[in-house]
Length: 85
Image 1: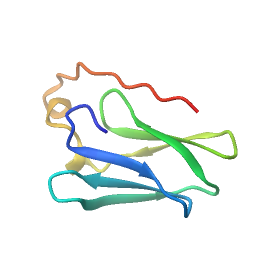
Image 2: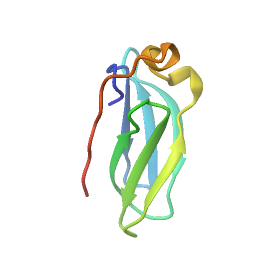
Image 3: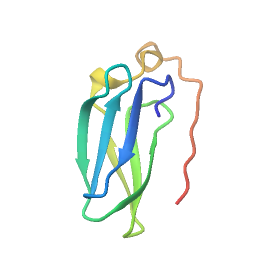
Image 4: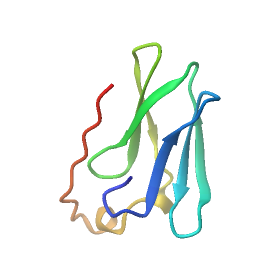
């Protein structure tokens, strides 16, 4: 979940990472990996997602700007999220 709780990133069983907007459960973006993703987290500023997978690599994708937390647009990020494999 991003730092203001409006977007969720979830790994799927078909080698994708899906971004969901919580207010209406609409898909914002879909990112593809070459293998199964195990975990996903947002960067501290909410502009990127990182996903670890079966291949033991961590990949990074840019979150579409319209999905950035409002705090990021104002330069006021104060949250940090950690995720482990």
